[in-house]
Structure formats: C-alpha cells, structure tokens
Image 1 (tube, rainbow, N blue to C red):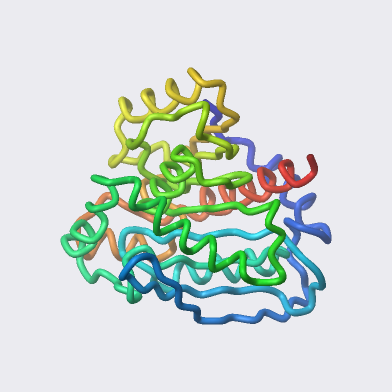
Image 2: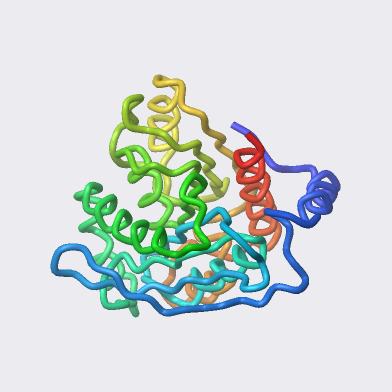
Amino acid sequence: MKIKSCIPCLIFLNMIVINPGFGGEASSANLKEEKVTYSSGDKTFNGVIVYDQNREGKRPAVLVVHEWWGLTDYPIRRARELARLGYIALAVDMYGDGKVAGTPEEARELATQFYKDPQKSKIYLEAALEKLKRYKQVDNHNIFAIGYCFGGSVVLNSAKLGLDFKGVVSFHGGLAGVPASKGLLKAKILVCHGGSDKFISDNDISTFRQQLDSIGADYKFIVYPNATHAFTNPESTNTGKKFNMPIEYNPIADKDSWNDMKLFFTAILKK
C-alpha cells in the first residue's frame, strides 16, 4: 500500500506533468461541450461530452462516472478538466433521464440496484461507451474510465466484468463487488483511497487486494492520509454537515490524486 506524504516531490511531479501533450493542460484550449442522449433497452440517458476544438485528430477518451447523487455539475467539471488535458470526456448518466438525488436516502435508493446487480453497471456503462465511440475524435484503442464514490465502484466492477478499458481510476470508490477474473479483466487499475474513509472497511480493502493479487492484476492502491470519503469534491464538506455524513473536502488529497491519475494515464499511453 502506497502512502502519499512527500509534498515537495508531488509539486515537482506536477511541474513535469503540465508540459504540453496528453496529461498537460493546454493554455489555449477551446472547449466544446455537448449534451447527448443515448439508450440501453427502454432507458434513456443524458450525458455531457467535452473536448478541445483546437486539438486536431484522434485523442484518448475518458468516461467519467458520478457519485451516488447522480450527474451533478461536479463530474461535468471533471470532464472539462480532462478535455483541457487533451482527452475527449463523457460525463455519464447512470440513473437515466439525468436523475439527481436530493438526499442520501434518495441517492441510496438509486444506487442500490447497481450494488445488487453489478452487471447492470456494465450494461449501462457500455451504452455510454458506444455513444462516445461515435465521435470522430476518439482513439478507440485508448479509452479510460474514472469514477467517484459510487462511480468508482461502477468502473471497477465493469472492468472486472470485461469492459475493454486501457485503465480505470477509482476516487474514494466502493471496493466490494464482483470477484476479479483473469479471463475478463483487461484494464490496469488505480485506486485512490482516503486513509480516513469510514465507508470502506479494512475487510473490503483486504479482499479487493487479495483478489487482484491472486490473478496478477496490474494495479496501484494509493492511500491519502487524513482524507475521508468524497475527499475530491469541494462540495463534500457542506454536504457532510448538512446530512451529518463523515465526508470532507481535502484539497491536498484532491490535487495529489488527480496528479496520480495523470501520471497513470501517461504511463499507459507511452507503452
């Protein structure tokens, strides 16, 4: 388990990553943002695609999966940030019709179906993936997925169920789910976990890592000290106070985990 603690080193790494090219934010980005609809069975989904119009040709693509609240502004902001880094990103709607929960109880009701049936996550995420692939800017050989909290669980389970991503990143995501299978898992995995996350048990962590180790999976598990669940979302502190939830924004862990994601993607794309 890797612990992040060397802030000067992280600042140095961030200086490296912001160089031009994928993983480095373009100062002259001209973002195109489009609301899109796609379907799976009888369900219709409303997502948002973002890309830099100033960048020519095909580019790596990223699916962004929201927290259990639904497709709020937060994952769309992350899609914009990815577009500035040179990717084309689709902020995914997992619940259909753009549903957004107003309370933890509503969010739990919407999310529970996917925890009970991870295959449904794969099916709905696959529909989003097919929509993304229709864009001429997408390099179909280099597609990633990232997810936050609930979304982290979605991307991990979908990768373990065989969705063909180059890499997936879970930010403070759930780790319980389907067992890893060597015959199905194709993606490299990065887990960005808060060291003070009260929602993820030590048993969940141990079981998750043992399963990946047992099949020789290519993964990194990074722990950010003093970071709670939802540590990347600036709204989480107010949300935690409002609903009496043990969540809080951690700007250092947010910055460090985003930088680790960039390094993770860059390493894969160089191969």
